[in-house]
Length: 274
Ligand SMILES: [Zn+2]
Image (cartoon, rainbow, N blue to C red):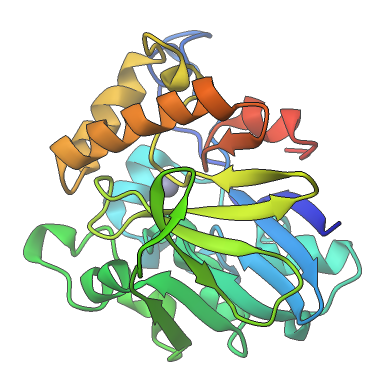
């Protein structure tokens, strides 16, 4: 069974807790995390997402004014994946693969810390990030991949994963990792499924932001719903895909453990320490 580490690679503190977390005061910040997986495999470490990287911490301005002043990350070096992994006894060169849910600033920031890794991503998302439309230019930070990563883009080929289109990433690995396109939040946003014993983990990225959004009927903090609508690339797809996740959680919640990138409670339930 694959050894899987849950890492928080950026704490973000947007105002205010009542709106963004559904509890706490109007003047208190909420605490969102950046949920990263580090999977030990026969071919080194596989990261799913990267959070913010050391270059973002050294130069917060590069992450953009909106992200910096509205989402309000703490920019702590100790939270970057490279430092989290060092703490676990790994070297940066141990990371041979990175699989991304999407290329937003708080997911791709650590790419530059692992320049030797192959970067596996849904082709639509890679195309969007490398050739952003005008309104996408604030979400995709070109400096985060200016080092020229070895991109490995994927198209779906009709493989099904619990009824979703998917594609198996990283051939030859002793751990099954699948990219499951779930577009809407960004143009090529995807979930990433990782085989974990008899079941699966499904990193849902930013398909939803709060565990209560997967309830039927959905609930969750108003501020987070507004934020998601503000940054979405395609509302209809985003809402439809969120509904499909709700159905997956209801019908296969025993086999598939779903979590999103930014919910601290889900992270702690899976054994992460934030
Ligand atoms: Zn995000």
